[in-house]
Every structure is written in C-alpha cells, then in structure tokens.
Length: 435
Length: 65
Image 1 (spheres, each protein chain N blue to C red):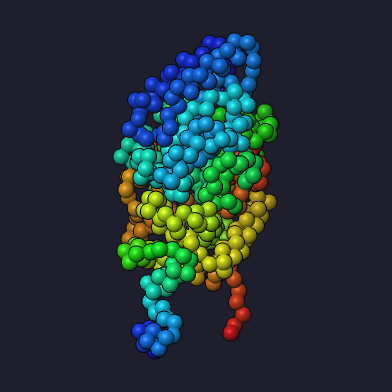
Image 2 (cartoon, rainbow over the protein chains, first blue to last red):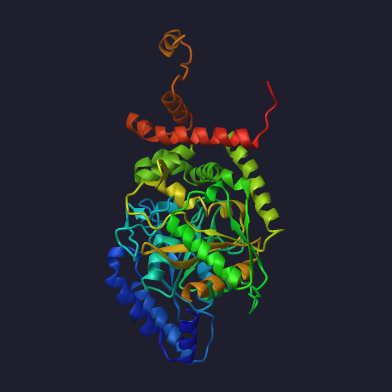
C-alpha cells in the first residue's frame, strides 16, 4: 500500500485503474463472500475525484488508495448491516471516526466487508450474508470476526482493510488467511461509530499485506507519528510458555520456534517467560464478553430472538444470565491478568507467541483435537489473542510461513502504547519469513 | 418437599436440576425459551457454571464459614 500510494502520487498509476483492477478481483472471487456491500459505482466517483486532486498536486497519506471497511463501521449514506438481519437496511447519517480519518487522508472507502453476525464469533459463517471462505483453501474458514476484511486483503480485492478486535477478531483472520493484523493499544484508535460488541474489550485496527502498511494505517487512524527507525538489536523477547500455550499444533509451534530462532540470530535476546495468570483468560474473557455483549443486545434478544442466527442467539441468551457477582469475579481476575502482563514488560520488551494454536479449520468443524481431549474451535482460536484484549496492550499478527500448506501467524505483543517496537519486531519477523 | 408438592401447597417451586436452574434463570432474565432452546443451551450453561466456579475459587479468597 505504501508503494501504491507512492505510485499514485507519482501519477504512474491512476486511482481509476487501481479501482478497476480491484473490482475485477472482487467479481472473480465473489464465492469467497468477502463483501456484504461491494464498492460499486461510488468507488469510481471517489477514484475520479482522487485523480483530479492528484493532478492538482494535492497530497494525502492515502490519496486514491482503496481501503475496505468491516461492515460494523458506520458509513454516511452507505448501508451498515453489522452482519445482521436486524440492521440489514440501516443507513447511518454519519461516518465512524475511523472512516472520517481515512477520508481526510484521501482514502477511497471501498465497500463493506463480511463479518460474523454482530462480530460475535470467529468463523464468519454468516447466516444472512453468506459463509465466508478462506482464499488459501475455500473449504476452510477464514476466521473472524473480521473474516471478510482478511479475505479482501489476501485475495487482492483492496489495498488494505479495517477490522475490529474484541477477542482476536483482527489477528485471528489475519493469521488464518495469511496477512498482517494489528490490534493497537486500547483507546489509541477511536471507536465512535463502530457498532459495539464488548465495550471494554473492543479495538479497531488495520489488516494489511505488510507490516509497513499496518504502521501507515495506524498513523493515519491514531494521529500519532511513528519514529522512522526503531533499533531491534538487543531487544529482550519473551517467548510465552504457559498453560495456554501448551496445546498448539506441532506445525504452528515449529514456525513460532523458527521465528524465535531468527530473532536470536538477528541479535535479540530471546528467553522463555511464564505468566501463570494467563490461565484465567478463557473464563475471564467469556464472562466479560458475554455480559457486555448481552448488555448491547438486551432488548432485541428478549423481543426478537429469532432475528439472530443460532450461534449468536445462544451466546446472547447465555449472556443474559451472567450475574453481577460473576462479572465482578471476572473483573478481579482481569485486574490481575493486566498487572501480570504489565510486570512481564519490566523484564522483556516484547512477547512472542502463536496468534492461534491451530491453522484454518475446515468450515463447520466444531472441535480441535488434542490427543484424546477436545476443545471447541472458537475457544481455541481466541485462547492466545484474548489476553491482550483483557489487558489492552498492542498485539500484531505477522504471517510466518505455513504448516501443511496453511498460513501461520506469529503474534508480537508490547507494553501499553509501544506500537513502534511491536511494529519494528514485526517487520523483522516479516523479513525473516521472506528470507 | 419435592417441587410438585411445594407447588400444590402454594409455595414457590424449587429448581432441582441444572435444567430447572437454567429455566428459572432464563425466566428471571426475561428470556422466552422453549423446551428445545433449554436443551440446546444446557451444555454451554453447565460449562459456563464450571468455569466461573473454578475462576472464583482461584481469584476470590473467601473466609471459612
């Protein structure tokens, strides 16, 4: 995307040509169900206006660059369904804050991507807008909930996409489809106009083809400027070894260990770290999210339960049963998880672990098997990402090769507001993957 | 006193199984659940209860009764 923006500024490529190329790919890949609302005619108008601005010598970090949006970000005058039947005809009157920032930077708002219904799930098997399919292997799930955004990026249907992440919903599809996904520090990007799932867990962030692109979008969306260079040699890397990382597919583990070895060879100090409090992640995330999501849907789930798909309906109904006492227990656990994560960064600069313990599951698979034990697939997929929604620290998923032909994501996590180091280590891992 | 006897005596019924507890909790929360809905939710409800109890035991130190 950074290269595209350069070519557009140099006028060696026109926004209209670029839009046409992406529209052709969208049409060819329609079976992947990446979009709920395809860019259509509005994209051409935006591209034409961008071309005129470029011809006048105007600049903008993303001037003429087509960026797709997960269909939970409000778009003025453009349908915003949140992947639901309930909001299928909702046309917001105002843009979400991240959309405003993209437009101010000159980006072309390039359609609305598919997601798990109301972002409440990690398969993007959407009962109303189509079952999304992994572009690497269409029999498999792209993950979610920002599944359509990851598909659009990997299948070359846009320059980049924006997603949201409440338990891993940017990083999981990025890992399963093979692109970069950044969940910034909680609060770094505005959520105004983003349809909520869990108010204390929600984050917005980019899905991109490169780490540099994720950095550029982070700058545009946060208003912060990243330092041009961050020294990585000598950084202390903690390779997370806890109960939550015990069950990881062998092929995934091998890739993460290869990334750690590469970092060591590049002059970083890698050692294993244990964070016992992460063992509470699954229960803490479950209680917190169930309570918060069912607060958002309190009226509809009681009055119109059949208007939800079966899996989301069940989650919301169970969420309505979470007691205040349970929520308090979960917040006490969360405080201790947050403090443990804060303390580990007194000893290391970044953490490294798999983004997901498994590669993309076959669509419809419900359990991951660990010897004679089973784990729900959706629980397995969020197991290694949700600790960083609970703690709010920045986390990046970077593709690092494949296991049995399926993409593997390595997750880099840093302390609060340390996106520069997270991105710098991510760039290094990206370079090692390509080496 | 079993729930049916309690009901005949005009007393509140007492939930006796996990399914009864789930049904009672759902009614109290204002959810309209059919019998099939209860059956579908029951396994996840049991897992939820077990997870929360485990978390409570690890996080909250309660004084001995």
